[in-house]
Length: 245
Image (cartoon, rainbow, N blue to C red; front, side, top):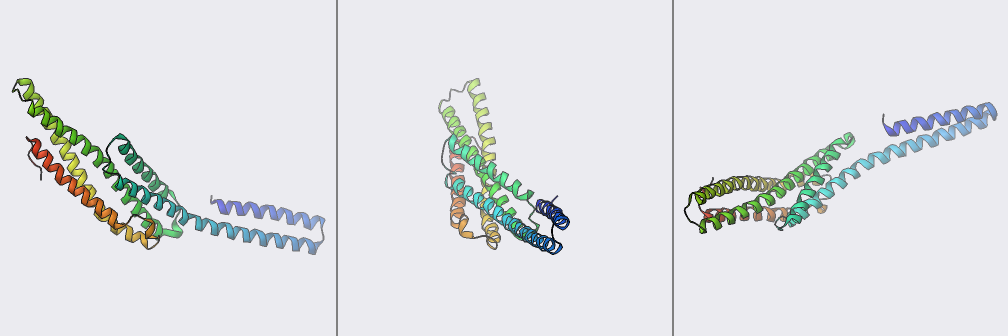
């Protein structure tokens, strides 16, 4: 049951009982005047309550959007910070925005449908960007370790059976991690390119100055692509890897 309507019914029920009591024990005219005043007060309170709820929904949507944007900005600014703490922070940003999206979709926002749809699109875009940012960080670090491991192994060449077996294993691991990293980086670059459209759509209902600017996101995209190009070169220098195109 709708909570404002339920509360209003409770108010009106109590006022009706009060009015009947006045009719039984007070003057007829006085009782009617008091009952009418109480009904008017209840009606005014009900209208105020409903209007406040209507205003509360867009405020709640705006809060989710703003926090999602803030987390995106922090995530992009720290995407290339090394270490487990940085990785955990990125994954925490993703998890929080994922929770925001679920909260948004559970809202009764029919009275603000266009705003809710634009917010859904924006928060979904941010969530997917942060998902790829966290994955990009993880794959990039793992791939870097595999490159170093293969290079070290190749320099220790002794051509024994064990050495060859280990070299094949390290190469296969490197190839697997390279494919995962490249797929993630390219997907991230694509999502970052779509961000401006999502932001523009939301800007019709929300102050865009409170969201990460296109320049920041564009710079992040260029950094992702530059890192991808440099990583390809590192992998090629590690040797024994056919470049996937």
